[in-house]
Image (cartoon, rainbow, N blue to C red; front, top):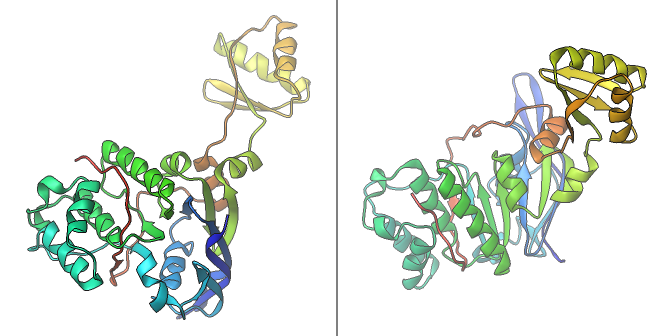
Length: 331
């Protein structure tokens, strides 16, 4: 697949009272065409700085960036019509309706008026299109932001925390929308702290920590690289749990007691566990492999727990573009 987005050796430093802070320290990222790509990182990792730099809102100190094969920021005026983005929390005029807001953006961008109703339908705001934005919930404002980013049929769509404020049903429909957009040929870069959703929706991921890339690739490959061989063991009685731990340590296994079960590693075959315990008259009530998920990999690589949202700077930016798809959000 062709690379729609390429970042090589990106660097960004800030001068502070304590000296120079490296927000980006040689960061690399590649996103291939037609994918939904998850861009993950804890607060302060450089994630939002990367997106703002990519869109020409921040000047980098060093590195190379390209969108749709064109070097940026130099080529941004030529490719802006092919890029839709929501970076940080978007702001709208509260006394305008959703239709007014999108109509103004469509007129400014040379978009056909009928596209406004199409994107309102797409994100589930058709029935509230004539209501003032100040009456909208946080989730509805987020849907309005996504609709503004879909106005001009972008080839690359960049969304920073698009599920912010959405209920579970809305998140599920957002997942469907993102997949439909990718199937239509659009490339979607999705930044989110809802790691379970990223695992479900994304084809590939890039994880950033401390301004550097710490993992990248297909979601399945990233998970496989960090797969655990540990086994969860539960016994019929608490007394059996301690006896089993002793027996398995004698076998040479690594054993940790975690509440009502044992986590057992360094054993070639699970059958060796059951055999060793049965020989001592100990019988298991559960023996199951420990599966790895994106959240556990994220925590391992970054050393920080994901949170519900990131700090948003005062400078709020929405680059409004568009794209065809089917779907929408419920309330």
